[in-house]
Length: 126
Image 1 (cartoon, rainbow, N blue to C red):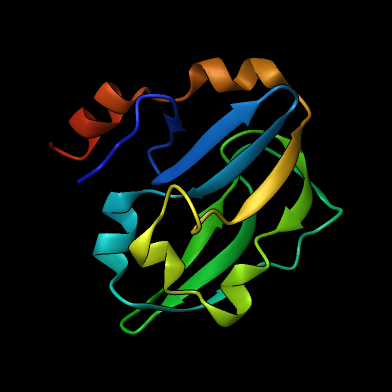
Image 2 (tube, rainbow, N blue to C red):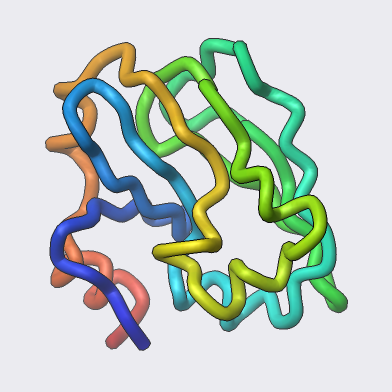
């Protein structure tokens, strides 16, 4: 399993890649593996301010539906347009083409409370 060191992680299995005052958010390699084949992503929060820990959408796999939780507070700027026609990109490339939302950070200091790659690996028993 892959856990890039330049990302931060949550105990709910989301990752965040911060660039300035914006960030991309997705689910981890571990999460997509646990979910199985992803068939649909439902994110209807563009333009909304979402608080840290709040629901920003759901992901549907063949065997389950899972909630998506915002790793930090921010305004959802866009949803990855590729996910509508190609949700399986989350399975193939969770940290690249499989990103889910782009956000504008409301409180950048919240990022420091997230898990490093090493801490996330411990969290999932790797």
